[in-house]
Amino acid sequence: MDSLSANEAKTQFGEMLLKAQRAPVQINKNGKPVAVVISMDEYESIEALKLRLLQSRAIQAKADIKAGNTLDGESFFSDLESGQHD
Image (cartoon, rainbow, N blue to C red; front, side, top):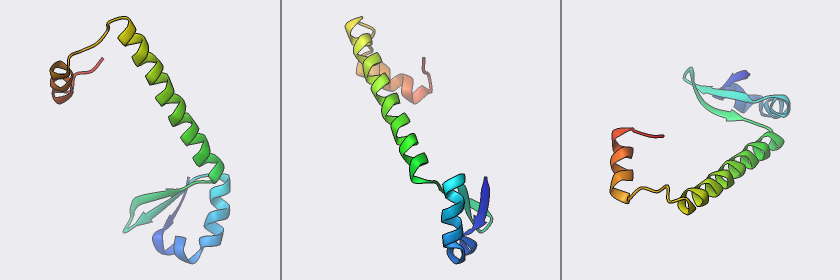
């Protein structure tokens, strides 16, 4: 992944946009990564993946409820606070 300083990103904005069409571009400020610029196609792909994951989880949740595979709220939050998970 290409990386630019925040100042370089500002002064080379057009070039950065061209680079982002090919691959993500990392933006650093004070030597630390603070942002990534990606193409619209890549952004839309990421959003579609997130939506499919959410839909998959909703389908699994419905199946779990139908099968009686549920937890009461107190147990759920207790497990969450202790860091336990399936």
